[in-house]
Structure formats: C-alpha cells, structure tokens
Length: 367
Image (cartoon, rainbow, N blue to C red; front, side, top):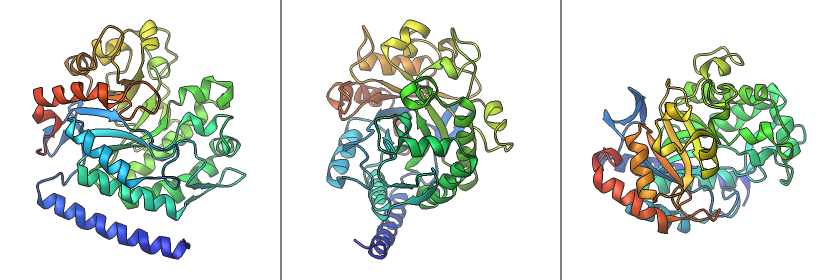
C-alpha cells in the first residue's frame, strides 16, 4: 500500500472514530478523561478504581506489524464481560517495527501501517469500553537481542534525538488520540530499572532516562489531558524511604532538574509486583503504598501483578486487598497469557467479583 493510500485510509478511520466517539457520548459514555483528585482517580466527578489487566501484545510489535483487529475486538469484549475497565497495551514492544529511527537515533515519526493499526485499536477500545494505558516503549528497546537496540541507545544519549521522538512521534500521537477518553494514561517506559542496572540493556544513567521522561511528560501535559506515569519494576528507584531504596528517580524534583517546566512531572506512580519483590519490600497488595516504600504525594497503582495470585493468595484476594490498602488500581499480568504468568481464566473470577462488589467504582459512567 502506498503512503498516500495509507494516509487516505487513516483519515477514513479517524472520521469513523470521531463518529463513534460522538455516538458513544450520546449513549452516556465518558465525555471527559480520567483525572486525579484528592489522591484518587475520578471520571466525570465520580471515583473510578482501575480494575485492570495487562494485554501487552498479541503478536510482538503488533502495531505496524501483524495486528489482528478481530482478535483485539474479541479480547476486549471478553475483558469488559469480566468486569475489567482498563488494560495496558505496549504500543511498541522493542522499537523494531512501526517507529522510524535512523542509525544516529533520530526519529522521524511512524509508518502509515502503524497509525492504521492504532486507529483500529482505539476504535475497538471505544466500542468495547475499555480504557487503554499506552506503554510507549520498554527496556527491550535497549536490550542487545533486539535489532535496533544500538539506535535506541544512541537516541537516549542525545537530547536532540529525544526531541525528534517527541516532535515527530509523541505529539502526533497525542494529536491523533489525546482527545479520546479511552486513552486514560501513558506509561513512558516499561521497567526502566533494567536499562540502568543490566549490562544487556546498556546500563544507561538515570540522568538520560530522566531527560526522556521530563521531555515526554512536558509534551503530554501541553498537548492533552492524558495522565502520565512510568512502569517501575520495584520501589528501589522510586523511593527515598523504602528499605534498600536508592532515591526517587522519577520525582517532580528529579524530572524538573532535567527540564525546568511544571509539566515535567508524573501524575501517578506505578510499581510492578511479583513474589521476588515481596522478599525485599513486603507483599504490595497487603500494605499501603507508603508502607511498601512509595512516596505519598501521588496516587499509586500496582501496574503488574501475576494473574495467578501472589504466594498464598488468590487473585480475588489480591485485588480486594489492594483496594482496602489504598492502592488506586491493580492490573494483572496478563489477560492473554503471553508470558505464562496466568491469563483471563485465572483473572476473570477476581475482576468479576470486584466489579460485582463495587460496581460504582468500576463503571462510574454506567454499564
């Protein structure tokens, strides 16, 4: 397909998406974004709790690759039926497909096929009423077993290259989807902890990671009402007080040291929890976020947690405990079993039970 034909098809899809959004609003669906208020998430003036999941990919690097709209539509329908109101999608898994990056790490936007696939994803999300947290990239971008890892390491080393990504990819992404309430948040990077710690990911400094986070957060806050976060693997680099922690590398102060702008900030914290974390910081769903080591200045979500349940607990117990201890959401890894950590078979009873106990928190906008 030529670029011109792809652009025409994208315009058609955008028109259909806009029509669908107007119809959804007329049907009583959200006309505004999820926001932070009083340390919680709110939608249309009412509290919402993220009864969530991760659907990171179906085929690795789906967008601009082997995106299957029929599969995503059916799976999002199953999520809604299971009481899930939000899921996390990696819109680029390793930066090898869809995003145009040259040998020097300069980015020049995305392919027409990439935009076409994302158009379809957000139309599906609106149709099935699933809020999407879009993860822009992962530590995988920098990992030495991926084709473009050298380009992404050069990208992160250069303010100019980061700006090229913001200007030619992130801002167009926001212009295209930032008005949709179904894009509820953007996760700037999955588990940057490993980019800093692991030789296979380059052992890149926090200063360079912060340079990206600050520039991206500033752009998102300038161009949209979408919430911003970073999917941290553990409290170690997100806490000034937790046991064995090395300081909050994603605080407002840390980001504004790189970009002096009020938009250089996160809106909420995400931490990932697996049983190995519990050996260091305790079992997250059964502690308050501050007892787990996170700062108290922003809401906190458990952005990954095994769909099979933490050691000695069921997923239903984990979700209810997370709510009772002041977390503002839980998002199991995964709904579709891509990483062999459980799937909707194990998760469905938990999210369905939570919805049935707290319907007004899961769907404040209605069924």
